Length: 496
Image (cartoon, rainbow, N blue to C red):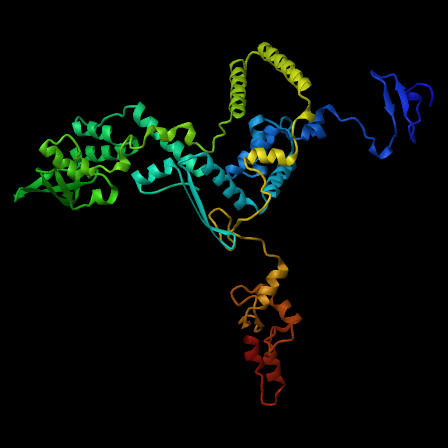
């Protein structure tokens, strides 16, 4: 066409030349019309099902990746997202989209998980002077891994054990920091007026103090000394042990040397659980001892045994401490707090929405989508915080089942069941008198009331079958009647 025309005048069935259209907001060029690509407009109620709305944003992919760290799969992650936001149409992406991205993360890692882990630990050891890492390999299979940092070394020095293997480590560190904060910033409620209870609170962590407090309290209510003796400067006491009804259920002997404050009890409470028992505290009350001897306080139960530097941000390896991540979290938190403050004010909510929309349009104009590296591998690499290895040198050990890898249970089809049953030895069923391997007399598949039909349709047996005739007689009776030596007494037979 050499002249411009309106869209209503154009026959769009077969065009290979450019066609200029008017009657719309802007002039456009129609190069070709393909009938199969044409479709109706999307209903306004189904806009969330459009391709654009189903596309996952970076925050959605980050959410899926973080759920995987907590052993939450894509399907459950989608259900949680729907529950958090209130409806399916508010959530970007479908359950299939979530599962597809989870598959992409697995495909990105493939068999290079051991290599990625070694690369990550090696990179960390290069940055941190106090971080040590080494792995033992046989034929490029990682058999054992060891790493230690300042926190691990101090844990081993104080507690005698080490916990690593990052997410689990950080969870335990957070629980320890939470308990440490509770111990130092709150005061418990005391149950006695004894000074030794206050001394226990100053020594022990809050969790252990509650256990020691029980022993101190029960030493005043459920224990008493009924016999004592002194031999070579050693005081020996017989202490009763009562239940909650004040019934004596046992007696224990406590020996104490006041020269060095050494003490022992036949209940072996300190040896078993690591802190003194109620019988010892009963003797302490008798001698008016107000402080627990230091030799009977384990370091692992002490408050403040670990330096505060262990809980610093520099020792939280799982936390993304980059400036961009910190700023993103702060922005999201500020927006959430603002929305929470005006959640019941429609006017301010509308004003905030308008201002946020203006900020978004401005940023989108300044930074188009094409200028951002949004390739699949680039996004996954950013989320898992490790680059895809170009050369895989280390692999995981084969034939090893670790904790959490599943029970390896699967559904067995009828064909495989038949093969398994055919390999079992045959045994004679006392109900059907056949050599079988799939049932016995206890679990015979045919009920007894259907035995007549079963017997009439099965004649091929290894032994002579005992079948029932229509008149109620068996085959054996029929053979006896046919023989010459058999006489029938009709009266007896009828009575029977």
